[in-house]
Image 1 (cartoon, one colour):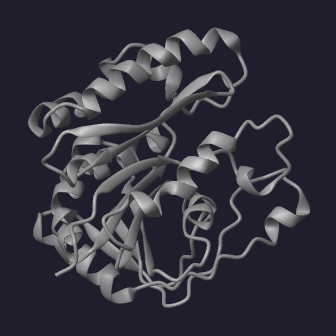
Image 2 (cartoon, rainbow, N blue to C red; image 1 turned 90 degrees about the vertical axis):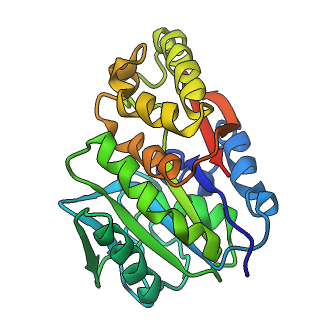
Length: 263
């Protein structure tokens, strides 16, 4: 039997940030956190299920592609960042298993046999798993952006963790592009981050209730004018009955960015 894998919510940075010159070291600590992730796991995952904040669909949809391509869904970056490679295999078998679990929970599910990995998947995982040897399946958010349904999807997927599958929510705990770099955003983002950390660290029933009402948190809409980068956290949190732990945090471009682990 494989060891049970945690579920994680990680930051994926800004575009291809880890693969560009960074003279000010803006992304150094985040990159170091991602690079250290494999050593923090109980054993190498059998597979990785990644929920990216860059894919929304009417049903929870899973990439069922043997050899996924890369989607360079970022704009205005150096030409070499559109030549990045990360040839991790897909797993149509895991995609179907995950879709079946979602369907058995009474939630809408689907398979996509064409879509590749967007940058919410390949950018952080190219740092964490550069050998690209572990099968990866990408999962969409539910396009309603309803936090409760994302939490329910996480609960449905929890059995995969006992089969050695790492469930990984990839987003950003602060995501307001217009406020980034504005010093006035830092204090509000710290308030929101403190609330989010307390919610993630709560026991499962309370945690779900808090996260379902995330809009009531202080400065919630300043930190997330649109919540697609926060919602992968809901799926990661839903996949665990244990309290979460704060894995990483720092101010990036004036906003507090955190990562969370659920065992």
